[in-house]
Image (cartoon, rainbow, N blue to C red):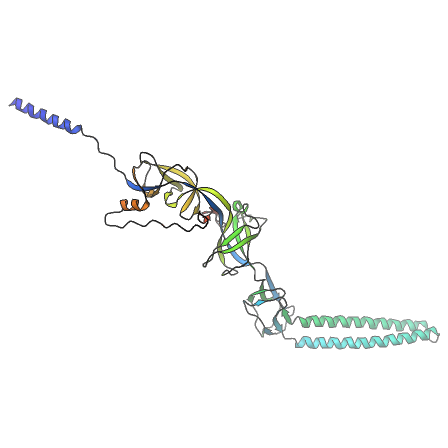
Length: 396
């Protein structure tokens, strides 16, 4: 009996030993991913900025009279006028009366002057014949000179009355578009602005740039101002020579030859082209942001991922610029990077659709891959990371 128990114990030990000799299970991939390689492309450098659309030059129009009633207003807001066009008329009856009185004074002074001249001539002849005293001749000539002075005064008063009467017709000092009107027929004018013109209808976009970006922009820089119906082209006319001491920003003045839907007073965002350059790009989805930093996951030959910190810059369509941390030889996780951790084992497939299908729960449809944005220059539209002019934050 004891021998039988020993045999059973020995057989049990042999069975346990046989179980211990089996191979450990193979590790399984935590996620199925697709890969991308960083690519060098030529991109357009742009600074994104915001600012107001303003009139290139505004002309304030008023009346150099007071206490008179407006007879008629010939224009409305939005009216296009040429230099010299009539804008409004003021009741001129009072000034016409004053002008008529001044002209009568001129005629009276002219008559008095002719009389004084003839008298002075006769007295001078008599004085030459010693029929009158020389003092009488000098007095007659003085009266002639006084009559001439009174005529000059009357002529000046008449000319002033004519100028005053001409002020009753207000004409456009320059060609442009009426942008504001604060006068109505029957209104008694008392000075101040009555109309405002945008000279030549010319608008400009005034963008605020941080001091670092301002140094890279100069006259002639091409600009695209965004509108709901499409971008409006412009050209930098000038750059402010000084900066705001509080905000450390400067103003860029962009001429808009054809403003299209833009109107004075609008606020718009625009892009200032700085030129073209080579950049290293990866898909936007490959970049993961954690704790305020940007990371990508590179895949090694053992299919394990490594978390790599990178510096990112401008976006170019569905790609983003990487400044440091990657080389064109790296293999980067393009889809699913947000679910990975450093050292995870992954299964690599050829496309993003295949990765989505492998990771989708049973019975659910995988999400479609994002469509590539239009890229007229081969690298997509570019937006340079720039400090927001108001708050100093980074905007991509």
